Image 1 (cartoon, helix red, strand yellow):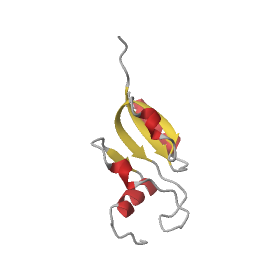
Image 2 (image 1 turned 180 degrees about the vertical axis):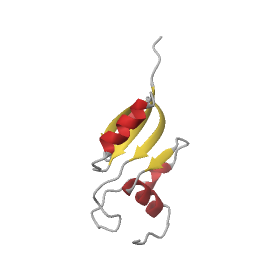
Image 3 (image 1 turned 60 degrees about the vertical axis):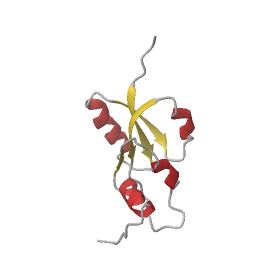
Image 4 (image 1 turned 90 degrees about the vertical axis):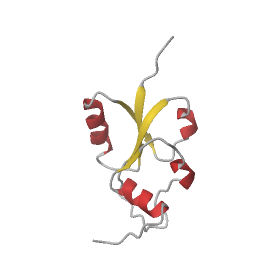
Length: 101
């Protein structure tokens, strides 16, 4: 009987720091994989995902062509951490008001 790694799945929105995020997760002895934000996540349905990290990226949430996730992605009991653009995306999807600082 094989055991499956617990893992963190990092959805990459194009940040220059995505590899650094993965490195820090791995330094904590946690298995993780990086996939493009628009990957077919059904391929990971049978994986032992314990959390998602939404990376940053160069886009502005206000751009018409900014990368998006369907709100149904968030219909999960799995914890989700948004970093930079990933956090702004979550805030926007759930109706927060985003303003320039």
